[in-house]
Length: 353
Ligand code: 13P
Image 1 (cartoon, rainbow, N blue to C red):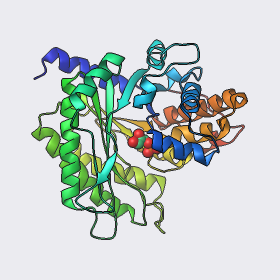
Image 2 (spheres, rainbow, N blue to C red; image 1 turned 90 degrees about the vertical axis):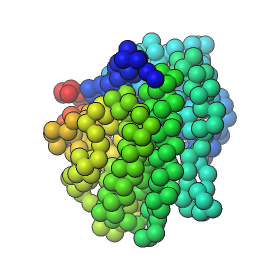
Image 3 (cartoon, rainbow, N blue to C red; image 1 turned 60 degrees about the horizontal axis):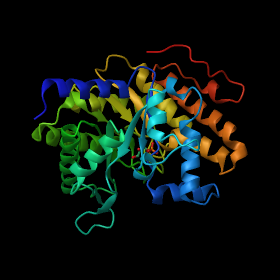
Image 4 (tube, helix red, strand yellow; image 1 turned 90 degrees about the horizontal axis):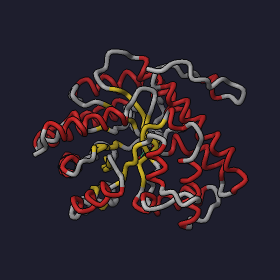
C-alpha cells in the first residue's frame, strides 16, 4: 500500500508529464521497430546510429519548452551522448522527465493470428526497480486492439489486455513510477469512426474496471489512448471536428475525472493530422483532464527524414523536430493553424494554457 506522501509524489509527476503547453516524446521504439524506421530512410540500424539519432532529438535546443518527458527504450536509458553525459542526466538537466517502455512486445492471443496480448509482467517488479535506479520516473505499457469485420476484437482479448495493463500499473505505482496506460485501438483497416467509437468505449470501460479492481490510484497515472478516428482505408473520412467531438463524447462516458491527463498516441496519423486533431480536441473546453500528446511517429517523422543518418543534417533535423514539438504545444491550446505548416508560416508560440 502506498502512503499519502507517495501518492502525492506520483500525482505531481503525472501533472508534470502533462504540464501546460508540453507533451511527451515517445522515442522508445524497440530495436525491431527502429530498424524498420531506419530502413525507410536508408540508414543501417547499428547501436551507434540509434544512439546518434536519439542524441539529435534529445539535444535539440529549446525543446524543453514543449517536451515534458521522453519515453526511452532499454538500450537508450543506458546510453550516453557523445560527450559522455548519460542521456538520463542530460534530460534531467533540461527538466525533462525520463520514462521507460517496460512491456516486451506482443504475442498472439489464444491462437489468433490477428489479436495480440502484451507481454512482460513476469519479472516486471525487478525491472522497475532497476529502471527507477537508472532515473526513470514514469513507464509505458502498450496494448493493441485490432478491429476486423464484425468479429474482432473479442471481449476476451480486450479483457486479457486490460488485466495486464492494470497489473502493470499497480506494479509501477508500487515502484514509484507513474504508469502510462496505453490501450491502442488500431486505425488499420477500413472501419468507420462509429465503429472505432464503439470499440474504444468497450476497451476503456474494461481498462478502468480492471484498474479499479486492482486499486490502482487513478490520480497517479496518465492515459495514452487513440483518438476516435476513421480507419486509414475508410472511404468516408471524418473531419477533424468530428474526430474531436467523437473522442470527447466517448471519453466523457468512461474516463474518471481523477485521471489528471490524457496523452494521445499518433497511431499512424500524419504529423499534421495528429496536430490538427489535437488542436480541435483542445478547442472544446470543459474537460476535466489535461489533453496532451505522447507522439512517436507524428513528432519524429520529418526529423528522421531530414537526418537520414548524415551528420551534416543534424541541425536541419533538429529544426524539423523543434517545429513539430512547437506546433503540438500550440495545439494543446487550440492555437494551431494549418498556415503554420508552410515553410514561411509563423510557428511563434502565441499563448500557453
Ligand atoms: P505513435 O505516436 O507513433 O503511435 O507512437 C506512440 C507510442 O508510444 C506507441 O506505443
